[in-house]
Length: 249
Image 1: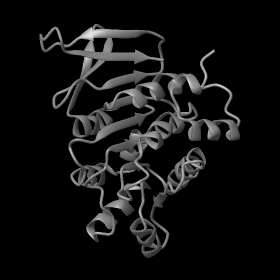
Image 2: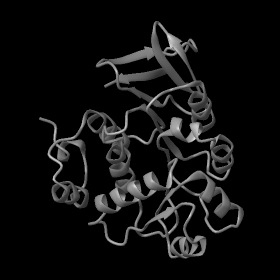
Image 3: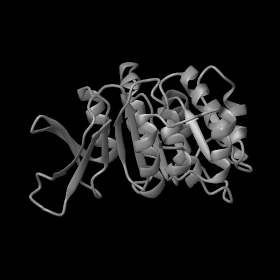
């Protein structure tokens, strides 16, 4: 049986797993956690709500954070205030045994000055709704120019709520060198467009299967949730050394 320890989590995170009563990782966690712990890569994952995707991206991000520096290293975008607070709460529980980890929630309907003060004290990870984050960037209250990781959670829902332009604007303030992890329950054309903006990916059909490859770096990983096969497929670029991965859970 696969355990969280076998996935490669460090001792502080394993303590959190034990305290939270997690018995065994879900399918998306089994595939995503070791990948993101061992290999800095871009990721496009199709995963339904309730599959444990917050832990799938949360544990690797926490393990990669450098606690010694106060700069913001991780950004998580979510569509609603409620989800933003939920993710923040879960991330705080996961990182409870990481000394001095600081995770700040940024969302509308709350005092922006108080949120700015928390960020100024040193926010290793910012969890935000697009509208409020864009406003804080405009006011120079937050700096995401040196982040190492960017998560777009429930990307399809964010686009349904009209955040496309906000997301595009926010991404212009992030470095090209970051690793981007996009999670979505579906892959409509709008999410495909965002994936291209985030990863510079092309997506389409190849022998009835989904495909994606990365034009700026090596191929990202692409996960789906409706089948149970792992494919290694040669890129249509004609370069035999250039592969993209398709992992369907």
